[in-house]
Length: 207
Figure 1 (tube, rainbow, N blue to C red):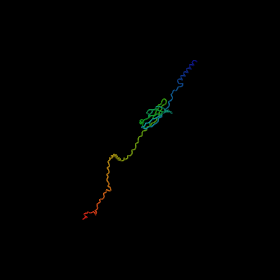
Figure 2: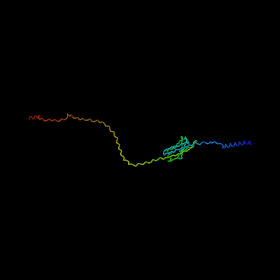
Figure 3: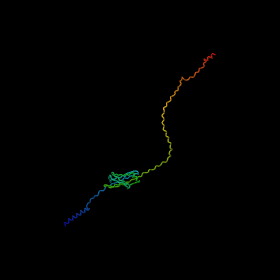
Figure 4: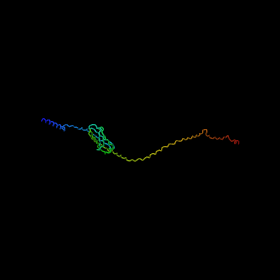
């Protein structure tokens, strides 16, 4: 009996150790820590047909700073537009005037998606794009016709003055000098000799 007791003790010890290795003892938990959450916020916008616009969003850690150099995918009405990268959490996507012209007036759904990384979980954000139709110009009322004034004859243009010929130098005639009679040269009245009684024909005196 004394020889069998140590053998039984060895058997019991072996059974206990084998049970502990099969799961009865403590186990190590090698699960990784959960990823940090991200928050994607899309801003709504409006645009008029004929103009371009920009879609924008902000990608942050929940209650934390923005994530830099992360890829954001853009969708409009479920159709993928393209992608852009964040700069300190801010990302934009440009819609050209041609892209806007293909949209019907009204509201459209904007969806931005961050697919996550080894450090941060993915997230989505949603906004709205309001497209406004270009207003058509209202026709201006036509004014009532007024009688047109009778046209006035335009004044005939005055002929341009012809240059006057240069006057030719002609010698001026010398003035004719008429001599004025001197007072001494006035014709005196002719003095007729009066018949003197004393002067008689001597022939008649002798008779």
